[in-house]
Image (cartoon, rainbow, N blue to C red; front, side, top):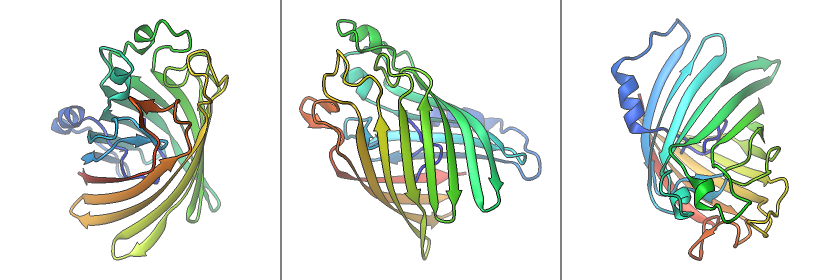
Length: 261
């Protein structure tokens, strides 16, 4: 799962897809850009919840930004949560997105669409005994506004949310700031709130809504290489986001490295 406007430097995509596209780069107009990135994180956290069972994840991405303001991109990561739920397939997340960025006076804005695609996932079938579970693929639309150091983003699910039935209309509110510390260091505080409609459900009698937070220190290492370290946590209910007693939203330190080319 990827936030297009994100304070955390962990949003990347599949190395295989990146390599294939890198072999035949698309032509770009003056002022347009095409960029790739690959990397690894010690734990893939999305909206505060571990997607990789608190283990390392391989990631990478590709983004095309047109001079007109329109953009498209792809993102992907190795994950574990779908197979941990009993599905035989679904250990890869691929996100496809597109939108438009512009400005109105001192306010920059970003609107778009994001598809979370869990390749081959059988999440709904694996949990067929529980009517609260459906296919995990999710569609969201989003809008963000940035003024000075501060960014606010609102994401709205136009489908069921990450495999939970009857959750169309759920939303996520993201507030963050980008602080330049000098010497190529940056600091990004963030707080977000995930609202899940019709929660609790039959499958999950514990409320699925929660607040997450993070504080990320980034470092530009030069030559396209960057690193990050973040303290990430949530107040998610223990029974709602756990695997074998392991609380997937518990506070922890997450580190990552990324190469952009």
